[in-house]
View 1: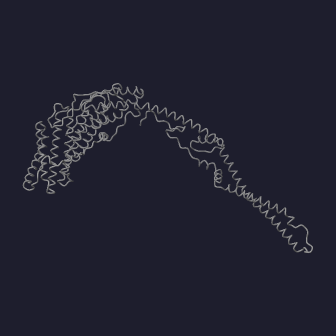
View 2: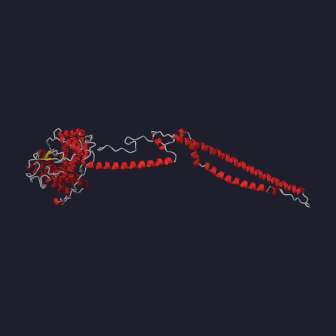
View 3: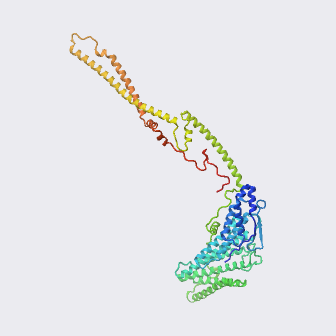
Amino acid sequence: MLSIPLKKSSEVDISAPLSSYIASSLSESDAELYKNDVDVLNNLRSLVKSQNCGPKELATYYMHLTQAEPYFPISDSVARVNFLWQDAFKPALSVSLANLKFERAAILFNMAGTASTLAVICDRETDAGLRLANKLFSQAFGAFRHIRTEICGKIPGATTFDLSETGLNLCEKLMEAQAQACFYEKALLDRRKAVTGQGKAMSGMLVAGLAGKAAELYAGALSYCDAAGANTSGIGGALGQAPIDSSWIGHLSFQKMCFEASEAQWAAQHFYDEGESSGTGYGKAIGWYAEAERRILDTIAQGEALELAPSLLAGAEALRDKVQKMKRTLETDNEKIYHEVVPSQAQLPAVRKIAIVKPIPVAQLLVDFLENQIPTRLFQGMLPKESRPALLRFERASSEIIQKLETEVKEKHADIRKQLAEAGLPGTLEHYAQDQGQPKIPDALFKRMQDSAASAQKIQQLSAEIQYLSSSNMQRVNKVRSQIAAEEKKDMDFRARSVDIMAPWTGASSTAILAEYTKDCQHYEQLLGQAARSDAYLLEQIGSPKLQGHIQLVMKSRSEVEASLPRAEPLSEQESSSGFIEPRPRYNTN
């Protein structure tokens, strides 16, 4: 498998231009404040251009660059820093641009290249090694795609081939193809384990689908190998015009043809297994083995013509021997036993290619390279230049709103003081505001409560006297009425016993004599009835729960009343004594 070569750069000092930009756009004090951050970025830049740079340093520098980009509009006219990078495939070619996106693209390119290098050296003879290689190739795939779709389109001016649309497509397709090849190798490993009873084997047709997709992806990578993207033929064409080393084209072509042969071999294996289980399918198996033989012989012939490494040819030759052996055996058995029709190449059933690789986002590559240790953010509190006018507008608008609210509060405060004064409580608010959260009743207010309590006690005493007097007076009226009735009865009895019928008594009767007294008694009785009804209404109002609650409140001691008052909460760190929240410090973006 192939790894993407890394880009190389020349030394460049970024501390002076960045410090100068901070001083001119902000202030000299800000330049001094962020001097250490600028030095950290400059030191990392020096490190990533050296041969001793590791994945962690690349990821750290890339993360700091991404975070710093909004603060520093590096260009030919502002904070100019010329970043020079060589082409990864042709180091003799280089481009110098004063642009942070160009620098980010080059660093992320090297991160993806590093991931591909780590993937190539994985031990793919084990499950763990295959999983790790697949993950690293998928991460490199995602990084190259991110550069192409999210960064390079925003870089002004021409770039080298490796950062062009064609070059990045080449890297993407190669990483995707090699990740797909890892899935194919994992399927082969599982089939070998299944022979010994370890796990379950993938069917031959599924393995053929994996191989077919890998061949298709290698063909896609091969199509981007010349600058025009037109090299889609076999190993031969257009080597002289290719922007990358010709050995790459030979390798990609050879891998494409090997996977095409493997696709045919595993399709043949699928129909052979089907014949073994169902008794039919041997004819299709022979047809696919014949196709596999044709493909692998073409592959070996092309490889020998280009003098590819013997290690590459050895695998193809082993596949050839296996295919030819199975083909001869099946042809003999079919002629003697099965007698199935062998379809031509055009009649062979198609193999459905299985795409299984997904690009892993750059964020996961960063986390892995940083070993889950996210670096401290640089330039904390600094605002991008474009955001500063918006912040000033916000501060002015906030100041106007605060002034308006303060005016409204003062007006409300004056209105409340006026209402308190009208209620006879002019000092309540001031006293409460001065108690530092420990509420106390002003002396004048408590004196009024004491006076009210004395009045309440007197009301209760008077209500008891009223009830007593009302009862006493009614008893007196009733006694007088009884005496009048007794006198009238006595007079009538005397007249009945002592007066001769022939000589009647002509003197005034007691009823006539006491008539005025009787009327007075009736009048007094009515007055007392009215008074009793008034007293009953008054006593009902005095005994109502609302008035009794008020009476009980003014009857409490001073300590009891103060304990029931609400307590003021202590001021928060950001709250001023006026009750307003203080604004956050300027340029704090945390």
